[in-house]
Image 1 (tube, rainbow, N blue to C red):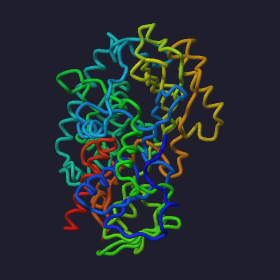
Image 2: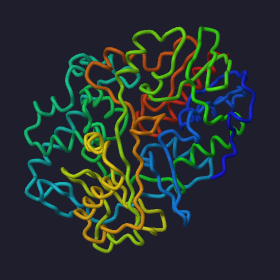
Image 3: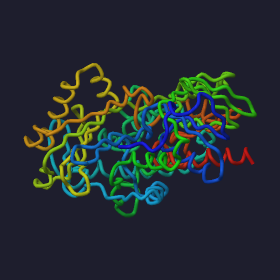
Image 4: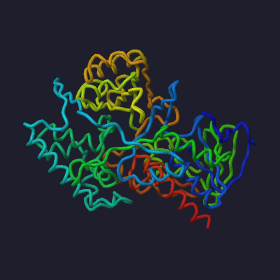
Length: 462
C-alpha cells in the first residue's frame, strides 16, 4: 500500500525537533499523535521499512486482509476502539459460532463447553482457583507490582509452582496457566506468580471463570490492525521516518542526540517506544543505570510463529465447527477462524508457540507447512489438507522485534528491577505496551503507554 509518510532519503542528514520518538509501532505513533496535537515538533524514527511494530497486515490478490501480528480487541479495550473510529476504521466480531475442537490425551472431541460432563470436579477446581487468584491480584498495585504486601514471596515462585502446590487436577492447572500466560506458558522461562497476578489485574485472562456473564466476543479491525499505525503515520506525514535504525542515544538532563544510520537528530526529549529487550540493543551514552540495563536483559520476548491457511470456503462451519481448536500436542496447539467479515475466503490461523517454535526454528518452510497442515487435518478433517495458500510469519526472525506478544517477567524481575520500567533516565522516557499498567502486552496497553509517555514529556517541556 502507498506510504504517505517520509523516509530518511528525503531529508537532510541532521535535524532538530522538540521530541524524537524511537519506534513506529502503535505506542510510539500514538505518543507522537498526542504531542503533535499539543503543538510539539515531533519526529518518529522507525528501523523497519514500514510502521506498525508487532502489527503487520498483508493482502491477498483479491484484497482480503490477513493479520500476521497482533489483531484482537477484547471487551473493555475502549481506547483502541475509539482510536479506530477516529481513524475511520470499523470493527467486527471474531468468528466464534460453532463447536470447539479439543484434542486431549490423543482423543478428539468437538463440543460447546470446555469441560466434559464427567469433569465437574475439574471445573470446580478451575473456578475456585480462578477466584482465589483474582482475589490475590487485588493486592497488586498496577503502577508498582513490586510494592504488593507479598511481592517478594510471590516473585520467588513461578505460577506453575504455585499451581502445583495448590491445585490437584493437572487439567485444571493447565487451563488456568494457559489462560493467564498464553504464549509465554510455552517458554523456556516461566513467569513469576507476581507477574501472573499483575496480568490478572491488568487485563481479563480469568474473566471466563470469574465474570457473572459470558464475555462478549473479541473484535477485529476490518482491513487489518496495522492500519492503525499506517493511518497515524499518514496524519503525521514527513515527521515519520522509516528505515532509520537508531544505533545510539547520547543524553543528559537537558536533551538528546540520536544517531540513526546517516541521520542525526537533536531534541529536548526522547521517547523509546520499544520492548525492553529491543531497547537494550541501543548504545546509550552515558550508559544506562545498572538497574535499567539489567531490566532490559531480563525481559525476553515471546517466540511465536503465526501461520494462516486459506481455503475457498469456511468448510468447518458446514460441520458445525467454530474453527477454534485447542490441543495438548502437535505444533499448532491453538487455531481459530480468521476469515474476513464476508466469510470468504475461509481462513484458519494457527499459533506455534515458544517451545514448538523453538523446535521448528531450524526446519524449512516446507517442513513447517507439512506439520501445520497435519495438525489442521487432525482438527478439521481432510478438507484442511489442501489450502490454496499457506502463509507464515516467524516473529523470532524479525530483526527489529525478535518476537511477538510482549516481554514477560520471570521470578525476581519485578521485585529486583521493576522500578526502572517506566522511570525516565535524564531526557529519555519509555513507552511500549510492556510499560503499561493496564492491558499490559496488548494493543490497548500500547496506546495507554504512549499517552502516559507523551504526558510525561509535555510536563517536562512545560
